[in-house]
Image (cartoon, rainbow, N blue to C red):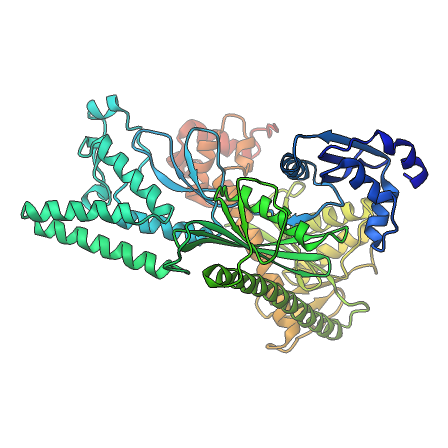
Amino acid sequence: MTQEEFSKIASTIPLQPGIYKYFDATGKIIYVGKAKSLRKRVSSYFNKTFTNYKTHELVQRIQKIEFTIVNSEQDAFFLENSLIKQFQPRYNINLKDDKSYPYIVIKNEPFPRVYLTRQPVNDGSEYLGPYTSVFRVRELLEFIRRAIPLRTCTLNLTKNNIAKGKFKVCLEYHLGNCKGPCEAHQTKEDYDENIRQVRDLLKGNLSPVIRHFKDEMKALAADLQFEKAEYIRKKIAYLEDYYQSRSVVTGMKGGDKDVFSILKEKDIAYVNYLMVRGGTIVQTQTNKLETHLDEPVEEILVYAIQHLRSTFHSDTREIVVPFEIEYPDVNTEVIVPKGGDRKKLVELSEKNAGYFIEELKNKERLKISRNVDQIKVLEELQTDLQLQDLPTHIECFDNSNFQGSYPVSAMVCFKNGVPSKKDYRHFNVKTVEGINDFASMKEAVYRRYKRLKEEQQDFPQLVIIDGGKGQLGAAMEAIEELELHGMITLVGLAKNEEELFYAGDKESLKLPYNGGSLKFIRFIRDQVHRFGVTFHRQKRSKGTFKNELEDIKGIGKATADQLLKEFRSVKNIRERTLDELAAIAGAAKAKVVFDYFNGSSEPDKK
């Protein structure tokens, strides 16, 4: 949309507060913004020259503008955030946060269980969190388990079921971890009191819980139950020690608050959030945001604050920030501290944001370093194997079977020296009857590169065949049938000696045992072996293999499995006498199997 085109509609834009949406030629929303005055804000995009290329590009793409008028700037602020989350427009700030945060759920059921979940559902249960660390959640749950006895079973503890005596107490009851509500050893009222204590503990409100335990301890001591009173005293000490050790900030005055800071590097901003409850930092999170239109740092921070407070369900009335911002929620007080505890919290938040940035840079440096090391290994491999090109794409094949039965093949793929697991492939052997490693290898290689050829995908520079000369020869037959000879280098790897073979060579190639090339080849070989064996094991456990015995009319899977269990393979079954088969499968079925293998019955192919 040009400035001339915009001038024709400028007078129709309302002066009231609201949100505006920009659409491109395809009708897709590319930007959502808020404004005190829609006309002034939108006009600013067309009435000034932008030095920022991305802003200029945005204006050039605008084909349609829509408005929504609201009653106040605060309403515009919340609506803008909602629309950004819904449509994720290309030119808006992009919050890099795709985590599924853990929650602690108090289940909506009789005698509620308390456990971790990442999938909150609308089932009437109470979800506390989210938390930024699953380790922290597990630690909290372990702390609760040691301090407050709750059930962990999944029994349906309705009043009627308990009254009918359907359940028996388990080991947790005898260990003192549960008070046995399943056998009515604990009342619902007492259990609900435990749940109230859990809520207090998770909110960092330790005082009522300790007060309850102290009252219980005094009552037990007055009743001369000193051992039980001592047990409660240890619980109190454990509670106090735990929270003292977990407190990041202690003794802080001023109630609950949310603390935010922001650091910006070019087009990336990092916002740290400290959730302070009861003088303790109970949550901390740093998020990465991508900016697109050279937005002011104040605007970025406001957007991040709203997102983080929404994500962590914070409704505290106090926000602490490092500089003045226009936060439109009239129910929230924004404080820019000059000194004292709040100033220390802002500095702590900035320190956390700085640490987050440094960690990201360290990871990137480590990644670059690893890439350099991988390139060195690939260059060494290229030299040792006399390859024309650097083997940035390597594939390795292996066969797997179980005591001569159920053959499968597997292929792993390495790109730039690291596993490319999305390119790993399994092959159920389809065209080979019986056990034939060479034919199975040929089929797997043929199917793999036939597909790559049909889809016009890149071929690997190096293919490793795990199994030596025989399997290598079979693989080469597949390559020649596909007319790919000279396009892919194949080598065979002998299983025992770890020697390498080229097709047609009489002598093997022995690489230095502790050299980088052979170590790398070993790693690839181990990967394909693990991948193939895992696949084979899964297939066996699911009963998805079909053997030749099940093709015999009158022989079901149970009989086939019984015979295989005894004789280990179809080959051994074929060689057994009628009497030997009858001892396992019975006379009638033994005759069917014996006649099938000895030519008295034609195969019945299903």
